Image (spheres, rainbow, N blue to C red):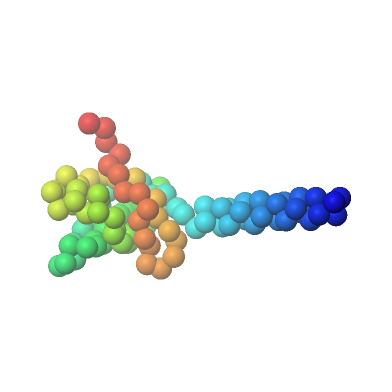
Length: 107
């Protein structure tokens, strides 16, 4: 009985440790950028877009691929246009996939 309890306890500890390790790896792969959109290109099929953003901190231009429907609708309706300052969170993998794409300005 005691050995079974210890086996269950150790397996739970390993599961929690594995979950924490996976969470830390995925968080490390994300980066945030704030800056104006310098170029915006919608795909012909309307299912993706590429935005080039100039980082306010470094001055470097970063190309982001946008695939989420909510942001694509905002781009199609011209609620987000070139020159707008945005805050984007993206994966560092190649190509940079946008996770969050929002205007920094309020109402």
